[in-house]
Image (cartoon, rainbow, N blue to C red):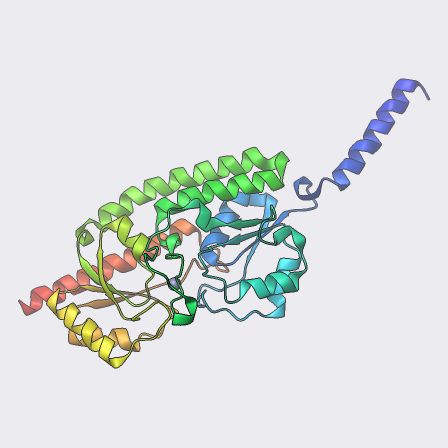
Length: 318
Ligand SMILES: [Zn+2]
């Protein structure tokens, strides 16, 4: 065998070996991403394309503050290369247990495979005084419900793409490109959504849980009261009476509530005031393949329909 042929053969062997150990960039192995909630999962799926397999821990039908830390979720985490969390204590009641159970150093807090996405957005409703979780407040560091603002999700998309690219360098440019393309599409849709919901600007609304600060900042609605007296504390009769009085006084048109909360209390307000309940999905229908844009589109249509119903009901009584 001539030297040059031998070198070619050795190079081929070397290439084969490096392909085996290439990890996530190789065709045989994907970047395994686990997102705590569906909205982050659907974004990761968008950005990861064919290079990432994405799973979620909390179903969009579950309250993400309170998830059962079942062993199958720890198993998902044991295999993950990247864990995406909402942060701001949203998952504090259940995720740390799962991280311990997973025995996977790659996705522990501080590791490169752990990304707290709240670090990518500007936090709203940061308490000014001391707040303790023992007082029942489940938003001690500010509201974690930023996935409802598509403007905030631009930064989240960029941050996810950056981290995926750090963990999987050969595909970094593709992740960045996919995030940029997503942001372009999102902006085009956002212009249309803002036009559809322009009549809501300045409108007083009532929330069930304190989830709406980011949505309100985006759309310009005014959240005048919440049915939960404090985040995570169920409504009491005295508080409901107060909220009803406000709904009547301010001619509130909409009550915003995630579909995973029982709607009994909101129905009481609806029946006794001009407000209409809008039940908004707790997240993208991840299993059904829904994208983040489709999820927000669905929410915008629900808001618009409820607004029109409330307006025509109000016109009928005038
Ligand atoms: Zn919350």
